[in-house]
Structure formats: structure tokens, C-alpha cells
Image (cartoon, rainbow, N blue to C red):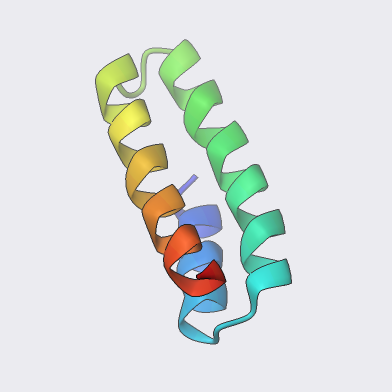
Length: 61
């Protein structure tokens, strides 16, 4: 999960919106899977996805 989040952040820092969008989808999927397996709470998963989505919207604007 952390690897996919790092790939997303790297794409955001490079201002590559297409790569960031695809990396966000993969990271969000892994975050949801971790929450489903009780590795993280549902609230933490939602918070992580929200923060990543805010970064994504920041480069899209």
C-alpha cells in the first residue's frame, strides 16, 4: 500500500496528471483492501484517500 502511495506522490510532484490519476486509483484500491482486512480503520482509510484526492485536484486545477 505504501509503495503505491509513494508512486502517486512522485507523479503529483512531477505534475503528471495522467500518471497521478492512475496511481490514485491503484492506491485507493489498496487502501480500501487494507481497511477491509482491518489493517487500518475505515476512518483512517477515508482520511488517506481524501488527502490523496486533494493533492490530485491540486495538480488538475
